[in-house]
Structures are given as C-alpha cells and as structure tokens.
Length: 462
Image 1: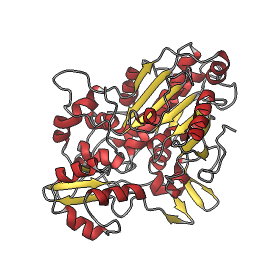
Image 2: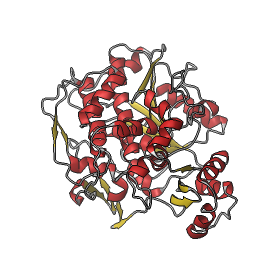
Image 3: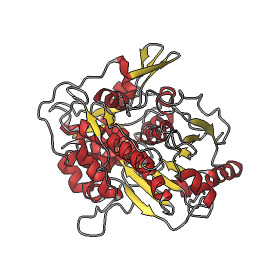
C-alpha cells in the first residue's frame, strides 16, 4: 500500500479529489522502517495536506510544480523528538515511569511524562509518589494487566494492557474501523461576511493561510502538530494553556514553532470571558480535549459566540458516536479515556507487531500523533476551501485509534525490516542553541519563527 492509498481514504472521508495534485517521491530505504507501512502513513498524511493547499489556492495562485514528498524531511519531522538538540545534547522523550513493564500475565504500557500524570499513576496503584522505576516494576509484576488498566483508568492515570491485534479487534477495534479516517460534520451556523471574506480568500503571492486566525487548545503532539502546520502556512495561531499545567520545555520548543502562546485559567469567569472574545474573532479553533471536555468548562461552540467557525479536534480513542448501532458496536467505548500515541500503539496491537517474543516494541516514530496532526490540518484547510464556496460551520475530527486502524489494515507489512535510521542533521535548523527538524513539507525551508517563551504572550491574535 502506498501513500496514495491513504490519500484515497482521506478523499473518501472529506468528499474531495486529489487527482490534480502532483507529487515527487524519493527512496525511503531505512527511513521509518518497520513491520507496518509507516512510511506510507507518513507520506500520505503530508500528501493530504499538500493536496488540500492546492484546492484552497487553485484560483489564487495555481501550483505549477509537484510537491516534494522528501523521505528525509518527513522522517526528520516525524522524529522531531529524536532529532532535537538543546545545547548539542539530545532530549529525553519519556519519563522514568513511562514505558513497558511486565505484569503477572503479560505487559502494560504507562504514560507519566507530566508530573500530574505521574502522581495519578502512583496514587492509582497505591505507591509512594517518589517511587523509582525498579520498585514500581516490582509492584506492577504482581498485578494482572487488566487490574493495572482498570485501577489506572478509575484513578485518571494512564496505562493500558498490551494487546494483540486480534484482542483489540474483538474488544474495541470495530468502533475504530467504522469511523472514517477524518470525520466531518456540517453545521448550519454561518460567519458574518467580514470574517468569511478574511478567512476564505487566500492571498495572491503570499502564504495560503495569511489572515486566518486559529485558537489552539491542544497539548503534547498531535494537536500541536496540526496547529504548527497551519502556522507554517501563514495562519496566526494563538495557543492557550492553563497556568496550572506547564508544558514540557523541549516539547514546546519542538511543537510551538510559529505560534503565539498565552495562559488562561478557565476556572475563572474573567478568563472564560476572554476565551469567548477570542472565539468571536477566530476562524478556526483546534482542541485536544476528550469529547465533551470543552463543554464541561462552560465553553460551547454552538451558543452563537463563533458562528461559522471551523472546530477541529483530535482525541486518542474517537468520539462517543464513532461506531454505528448494530451487532459489532463495542459494548464500552473508550472515548472518555485518556491516551497518547504510545498508549494507542500498545492497546491496538501495534506494540506486539513491532516487538519481539521477549518484549513489545514501538514504531520508529510517534507516527500516529504526527499523521493524525497533519490529517487534521489538511481537513482544516479543506474546511476553509469549503467556506470559500459558501459552506457553513464545520466540525472535523481525527483520532489516534482511527489512524492506527488504517495502519493496521494497510498492505505492505514486512516480516524482517531493516533497522530504522534517522536522516542527517541537514534536515534540521539551528536557532540559538536549539536544533529542530525542518518542516515535513520540503517546499518550506523552516517555520515562520522559533517557539516563543511558553505562555508569555498576551491573549490576543496580535
């Protein structure tokens, strides 16, 4: 299966047509090498974004040359955590209590990169908050995978039992398989003429999204990848974080490029009012909350504050209505559970496929996050094109589990892949003492700006 198969799946979901978009391809060799066709997933998600740009700009400035799907650039971007250097030193992508741990009947995978996630994990398992990896592993080894999983989810911690592909298919896979690669819901609300004109008419000779205002409520990787791509294309992106949840420094340095960054406390009426004001001026809002979480904070996108806005969302497991009624619908959907790329890989069977008989493994990059982010960015660009044609508001969404379902169903598995390799430093850019991967779209040399100091911008679009 090639990247064009993913492009077909994207087109089918969005009702688009990529036939007029042309691409040049390179040799992947050991780049993103794995048993599963990760390179097809990566290239296809970038091709989807490029094709969406072509559709948006076809009248303003038709593209005369093919887009370059450069394996080195795509690999570097998808492996941004491993390519990053701060003061010449690599960064540590996972914390001490994040990873695979053997349990009484198999393996679990945990995620505890943030202090509050670590605290929830140790609390759920009745462990000392300062416990090290060795005694933590000893405790987990006495428990079954299901016990760890259920205790963690009840305690808002993040851990899953490592499943086989068949186990996932029988438990939850039907819900993911039946969801489109990108979900789109057409709303009836429309923007006023001024905002519609500003957000829907790409400038001639300039960045395709210049003038588009994006409000970014995402964290970690997938959502920030989507909004970073929109910033690359010229959008003004304002990322909003809670003052009580600091971002991991290197992660912000990697995924915050090209954006403004501010702090707002949505537990206060004053800051909620500020958010509502920002929404009234935004063309796009991107969220990474679990389904329903934004409404729980008192912010609804259908209350007349932001008519015609494009709401783009990413989640780990999909929405509550992902599976259609019928005999194959899962009895308990996971839409309200927390999850990250590594967790989804472990739950869906990917970790078993990429591992050995002795231990589960992982994809050569957090490809579910990155591909989902680029697919979401492509859907936003296509949404802007739809608004230019007179469409009303749109809700578009992706989930890591659905992206994983595509990867698991794709042809092209390799029994004994070569060892995955990273590209050279030529695929990175140096800003002061921070080295980061260049954009996956090789037609762009770098992002509009390095990451700004976290949370230090005022809550405006500038």
